Length: 66
Image 1 (tube, helix red, strand yellow):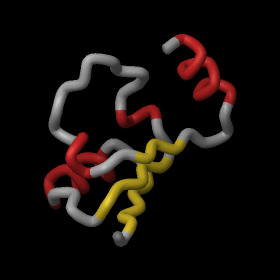
Image 2: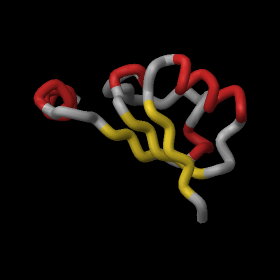
Image 3: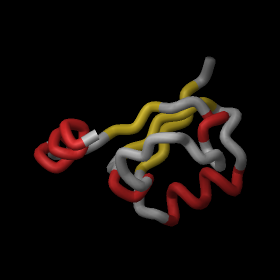
Image 4: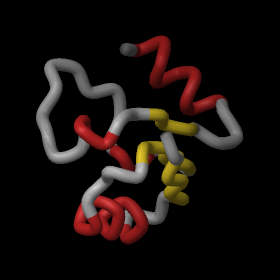
């Protein structure tokens, strides 16, 4: 985890790519909060509430089509 956090700290922009099923769940490992990512890419099945929360946190949201 420390290596990932160091990479994020030195990056100009951090991008998270994760399927919509990951949002609203708790994982075993947490590298960073969503607000630490400048851009978040996920699929179009993301709920409107989750999308609104991501945008409210200041991240750019990209919804990919399958």
